[in-house]
Length: 194
Image (cartoon, rainbow, N blue to C red; front, side, top):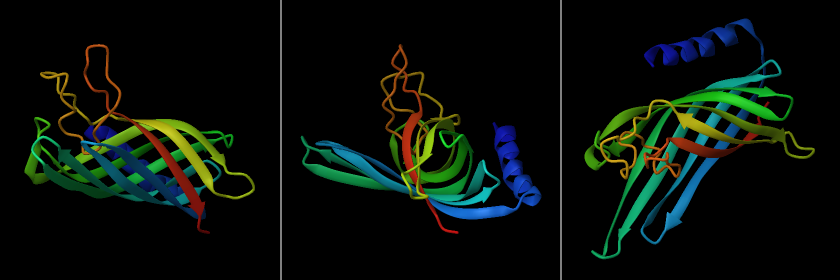
């Protein structure tokens, strides 16, 4: 896994050295879900540099707020997840994209998936793709995709438990034996800056 992260990092360093920056974009994605017992809201920002017609890459930042309402006990709690990293996307035919997003996030989850008062830095590496297109006459681009966190480790000893390490939980997809699958559905807008 360290070799994959090193490889992606080298691509981010080598590719710009061989190509001219043809523009910059601001990418924004959001996270939201809520119920009577809690929820999560967050935002991710990406500063992308376009290299050629297909490649965009750059740094990213993420902030997420989660809350819980213990209705039986009458208590409320919440926590923050934040951090940054980088991304690289390849866009094809003004219709699809594939990409990788690597971030290091400050997470309050411990190895066993429980809340901890000693937050730790947790790496995430999302690989995936989806639809990518310009919205009408504007140069604003919409990306809708599915990303898989290859660094998340499911809690095999308790299939009902959320994945123990991921600050991006809760995940909604489960395998046939009930283990949570670390898939994220993401919608992002990329706004041209230059």
